[in-house]
Image (tube, rainbow, N blue to C red):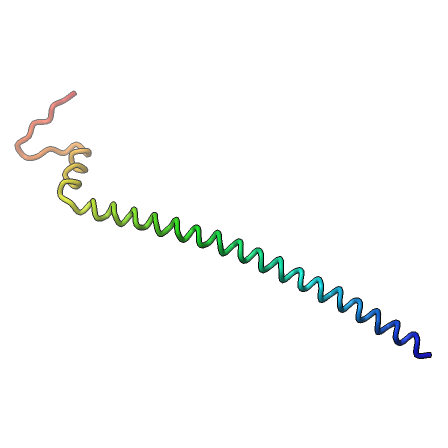
Length: 87
């Protein structure tokens, strides 16, 4: 009479083991996905930092009088006593 109880216990143990194996697999996949996402995020951060450094260099260059004069001339402005040659 005790035999059927052991069958049920073995079945419960087997199902629990399969469930545990599935959970371990799921967590391993999640770990690998997060590691990949972290690598992508670090690459994006490095790209953004280099872009920010380039923009800071552009801002520093824009503060010089030579750069401002070049921009003004590119827009077509002339100095007070200059004559614009029409082409």
